[in-house]
Structure formats: C-alpha cells, structure tokens
Image (tube, rainbow, N blue to C red; front, side, top):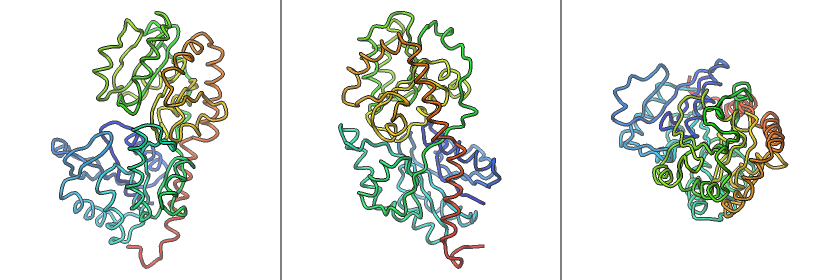
Length: 380
C-alpha cells in the first residue's frame, strides 16, 4: 500500500514523534510512505530524502503552522503526482487541514486524519476552555474526512457532541515499542548523585503546569539526595530556571535528542510526573510506563484512561501543588511502592498501548476505508 503521510518533522513535539514512529513501523511492514511536511525558507535548501515532499510555510511551531500562499498548490500537485492509495494527515493545526478534504475529493483520494489537540472534558481552567474552542473549530471539517483517528473514548464523545459523525471517528490510542522502551539498567542516578529521582519530560509551557510541580517540589523540601530532572524546552524554561536550580535539587537537562538517552533516564527514574492542565494522550507518559517507571499524571485528556484502575496515580489539575506536596515525600520514602506502581504501569502498556497493536488497527482502518471507496473513484 502507498500512503501519502502529511505530518511534522520539526520542531520536536508529540506530533513529530507520532509521525516518525507510525511511518517507520508502516515501512517496516512493507508499505510505501511518502512524507509531506512543512519547511521554512531557511530549510528549503536542504535536499529532501527519497519519498519526502517539502511544503512551503511562513512559520511553524510545536503548536501550529502557517503555510505559504503557494502551499496548497504544491500539496495538490504533489498528491496528484504521487497518486497514493490513501492520504493520512497527522493534523498540524494549519489552514491546510481545512483545505485537504476538498483537495482529496478533487483528486478522488481517500483521506484519514489523526486529531491530536489536548483537552480536559470538564473544562476546569482557561487552557481547557481554549482547547475546547479548538475542538469546536475543527468539528466543522472533521466530518469531511473519511475517518478521524483519536486516542480515547472521552475524545470520541467530545467530538460526537460537537457534530462529528460517530461512524467517521476511530479510536486508536498511541502505541509504544515495548521492546525498545523497557526496564533496563541505568546509571542516571549515579550521574546526578541522587538516591531518588523524579522526572518531568515534555514542553515547558503554561498548559504543562510545570510551575505547580516546581512549587510543590520546593515546599516538600525532600533533601539533598532527592532530585528532579526537567527534560525539555519551551517559553517558560528561562523564567522557571531562574527560580529553581541545583540548590533546590532541580536539574535542567534541556531538550535531549537522543532517544536512547531519554530511555535511560526514564528507566532510572523512581517516578515520572506529568502535571498538565490539558493533554491528549501523552507519548512521554506511555514511554515512562513502558520503562517500568511509576507514573503520576493529572486527570485530563486520555491520560486518566491510561492510569485508571491502579496503573498510576491521578491528580486533580486544579490542586496539583497541594497534592504533590503531600505525595512527593511518600514516593521518595517508599521505594517498594514505586516499584509496584512501575510494574503495573508497564503491564498496562503491554495490555493496551503497544505500537504493534496500534499499527495493526491502523492497517485495518486503511483497508476498511479503501473497501468503501467506489471503484470508479480510484485513480490507477
């Protein structure tokens, strides 16, 4: 099968990881994948790899993308020339997301989308209300895609209430390569001179609520042997780093490009903390769970489904600081407890969130969509 995949390669974010992992897995199974992605002017001179199509854009970030005026024509011409069996868009919050159904209808190509935006179904804060507006905005076009992939039943119910036909919505959770992400020996605690290590991994932005984690950390005052490693970058980093440093047991490791290094840190940590105000389905959370690390996350997005039933600890997003202030000392002083949580976390991933199962469901979805496209509409 030939799949034209429209996604992101930079800057690093969950969408980038999702596109990389899924397309690599599809190619390993013998499918051809043509990767269409946005590039800015300074990247345009870089020679694209085989089966890679650059789309011109004016700006791109971890959150959204602004295509150039000629991007639509480049996209349509590229799809016409590639003539794939199916188009899969890992939506990048771009105006082209709204034009893509019309383009594919004109070219008579079946179209699938993966819809990533974070959410909190209870809309308990400003970030959650803003995310809800994004869902309302996209609901008008998602029904024009042949299928829309989302990550949880909660997300499906939200889109259905906003008018997206249930028959068009497919729940396929993120998946992790559990052979690659697995409990292994790690020397990270020795490197950081810690006898107990907590980790946050992700963007450092307002909606990730790292501020609350750091305030709780300082108030808990766990002692010199307990460390908090912050992995990632973002607009809040410089401000927060100025107030929370090594004297507080906080180690700012920045963005780590090496996947192997990230796996070593996750495997060596005692607990992974995700204090977000809104989420989709966090790949970092699933990766930490697959590494056998005890996990604590807020009851937002699909993360509550991931940790329900004892696979981890859920926090209320409005009370993160007070809850963590109580919980952190318990986790630091009870290694047997964190070990049990880590075992349950890995088992949950093995039961529900493997990359193998994810790809199998995706292949089945492709076959279903292609089977419902009338024969005259397929270009050969």
